[in-house]
Image (cartoon, rainbow, N blue to C red):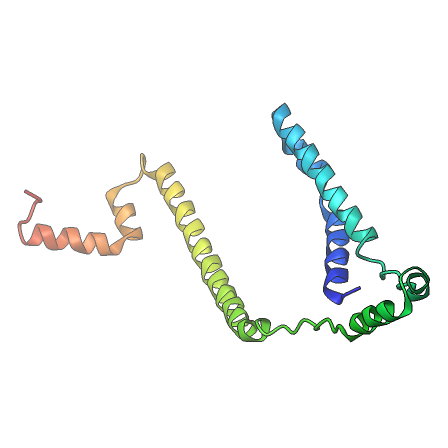
Length: 168
């Protein structure tokens, strides 16, 4: 059996064991969805079974003597020679080496973006907490208390009053 077919059979077998079919079935709401899901699972199991049985076994060797008796030695020898001269090329992956460095670079970028995102998320959570705190205190807060937390606004308002700019 070729290596790639065996790999596919192994991967599908492992995937079949790791799929949480019951967990996914619990998420379905309609009877039609359950019916479709059931047929999907049956089809997956059928394909998985075929991969495990048909493609995981080596092909049976050809009994050339059996054919020699029925057809004739010369023709069978010709077919045997042709059959044995067939070389199935091994798969050589030329694509992965080209894209592996790009993929690795994207992973590094992803990690950096994740870190930035986490920092931004922390900042936003803090800002939301501050706004919620401000919302609670707003009804009883004085202007002086507000300006203590936001000195840049106090400066802006003082400048506007000093310059006689009252917003109209």
